[in-house]
Picture (cartoon, rainbow, N blue to C red):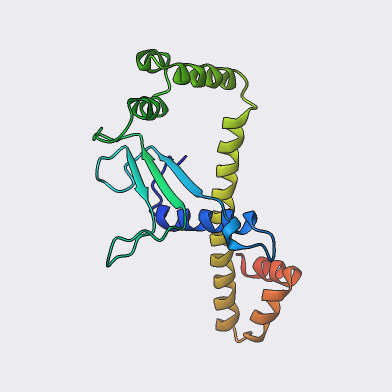
Length: 191
């Protein structure tokens, strides 16, 4: 599920495919053992700006359109789709429900699967300690970790400049490998 367009879905899908492939083969196992792979993103934005509910990608030869046959599909579902051609009504109802998970939307879908999903979501909303909150917290922690890394790099960069400006460049390398010294230097320079 992608709620924000971070403009990295193509490379992100490549990464997930690699992760799935690496974990599915044992050392020495034949590549023929790789099973078909489907990477599916559900986006609350149009990832490619064409108004489709579903974008499906496979590896093909650019010169001949010949399929590579690696049995990998990357599917991007779009809750903001407008073109219904080639997409089942059930998928459209599901994507509309994902976009607007209300009692009204679930009732309008008149679909047993969506009714079942809606019922489960209502149960989850009653108990705040279940999956949705956990996933949101996990995303928040990842985002904060990334922000922390950026902040740490910025802070160390400032420290390196201060050490260089004060003629103490030899301490830059030592500070990089010695957390206690680095913390002391942060305090010394007020960083």
